[in-house]
Length: 262
Image 1 (cartoon, rainbow, N blue to C red):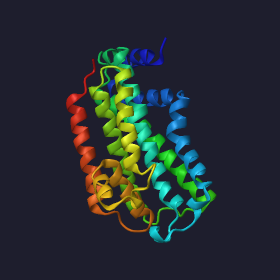
Image 2: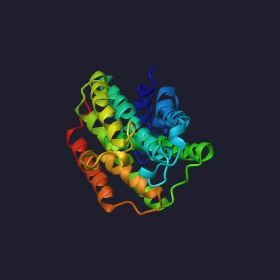
Image 3: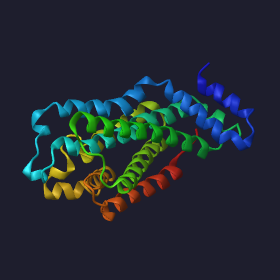
Image 4: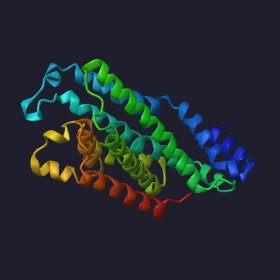
């Protein structure tokens, strides 16, 4: 029997005070059994960083980059790549799959509340993103000498708003998708533009003036700039943090309004 079905039966016997914790534990176990999600969220961004670092020109300081190297700019980008993958590819597939298979309907008959499942999903994916970020920072430092963030508190704040906005975007996709197929299509349609605005193909810092201004008004573009500024030692521009935070707030409100259990 599928594990989520067993989960709904177990929750029906769980005291109401510990339901949220039981849901979280169950979601952690389920995530650990998904090697594909673990690879694409945690391993792939760092693997991409290693491959890009093998390009000699990416390891040479550039005058137009203020003495930085392209590989220095790519560490914050691969951190964002893990948030995009978790928020737009992994989490919507899980939630819409639950809805499609009737698991959400069965959960509604248990003491579990909707917020318990959404919170558990966000917590599990946030944990995976946190591990991915730590791995990318350590590998970037040891393999290519990329400095750790010089403004750690600003970096943590920018990382938090970036992750929240990406996961909130994923909950909106889950809310408006009646099936897993549609969530996969919507996730892919949003995934590639999000990768562009995060700077995966061209770092945001080297984009032309008008294009960069437009990108900076997107949740991932503003996050890329904030992470880069914190990495370089400055406090992230409040405008970038504000754009990312505002997107996260609007997307959370939209997801709460549109999300349906059946």
